[in-house]
Image (tube, rainbow, N blue to C red; front, side):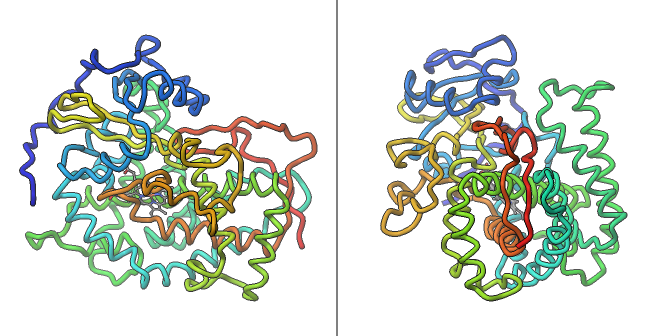
Amino acid sequence: MAIAIDRGYLFRKDNTQLGHIPGGYGMPYIGQTLSLVNDPYPFLKEQYDRFGPISKMRLTGQNMILALGPDLNREITTDSQQLYSNRMGYAGVAGDFFGDGLLMQDFDEHRMQRRIMQTAFKTASLQQHIFHINEITSRHVAGWPADQDFHFYPAIKHVLLEIGARVFVGMTQQGEIEQMNTAYLGMANGLMSIIRKDWPGLLYNRAMNARHVLENILAELIPAKRVGDGTDMMSFFARERKEDGEHFEDSVVVDHIIFMLLGAHDTTTSALTMASYYLARHPEWQERLRAEVFALGKPHLEYEDVSSRLPNLENTFNEILRMHPPVPQLQRRTVRDSMLGGYEIPADTVIALSPLFTHRMSEFWEDPHRFDPDRFAAPRQEQKRHAYQWVPFGGGAHKCIGMHFGGLLFKCAMFEMLRRYRWRLPVGYPETPGIMHFPFAKLKDNLPLQFTPL
Ligand code: HEM
């Protein structure tokens, strides 16, 4: 049954009164931001051990509740009482960057827009996209330099940005792709800015300027997309009509595409980078995947291969998403007073969920800090102990709409890499390199690798 939501929650400030919730706020203003960002697991584990599944914390000036563990993941993401707003949960961290993107929509409006976008992610569309994904990936991967140090992260990011520009925006000219991607990267850099003021010289100000450039580039494309017959996602969305028969406003189309660009590449770039690192550390796994890829006997992956014919690659993908979830923290804000985990939670309280912590809980995972893709294979299937212990794509109404597309990108890129090269870390590479977890997991040194052609 639909629940009537008073839209007043959109105009109220965050509730900051959390005196009755266990825990503390750390340093003035920044709170525990540095502990969480620099080394999240020990911080989260300490919160859990000292205070239990519900505690409070402060991140970049925002007081919030930290809700840990699979039961709370389920209760909050499935949101059977329509209590939790995404828009207000993410307003502080990402609102200015992804204003009206799908993730930022709430309740009925979200349901309507998601239904429209869903078609773009159905099998028939993905089957079309795989052609572009294979062409772009193999062109780039074939050109990587052999037997010398080469930084993997920027290289794979470049590949996925080009795929995003092709599949989401329909761009084919290198010049326009570069221009759009430069603006996108300028904007995305601002996601980690601590001082969110539009003052000249600040990172945030540069990011906002880049966002305006990106908005203009995309907005100029809309009139042609509305009347054309393009098969890219932007054309599709520009042609869609709302329930009142009108097209979506230009700004809504632009915001959806900007968020898609983020979804399309930052998350999967992270997964591919972390996977390439672990496969360099575990050459036995690299060989196992290579054997699986060659056993398929094809030069490129076809859509049908992706879901069922590469079980070891699938388990590796799952294991990487477990160890280093590209989206390490989800956020919501309560729209009414409610109860959670035995505590009264006032309206307008921000709540953070942590896939990163849940994925390392020893109650659910054997030796959770170890890279062990077989934990996902029969008969072990550790992920089945609780439906919400493995949540790299979230859950409920906002569960990642691009999860199959992300899997497709990951597998196509790995397929090309495994077929063409054997790779390793440079001599003397540190045993425990620095890993950055926010906003998306990656090696701090951008992962130098040496590729040897087969
Ligand atoms: C490994 C790859 C990916 C991971 C780990 C990932 C993770 C996530 C997560 C955790 C959410 C839910 C956030 C929340 O509930 O607060 C989400 C939502 C979303 N993702 Fe992904 N994502 C991935 C790939 C993609 C791709 C490739 C696309 C686009 C093609 C995409 C587009 C979206 C969109 C549009 C939403 C919002 C859905 C909604 O609110 O209804 N994601 N993603």
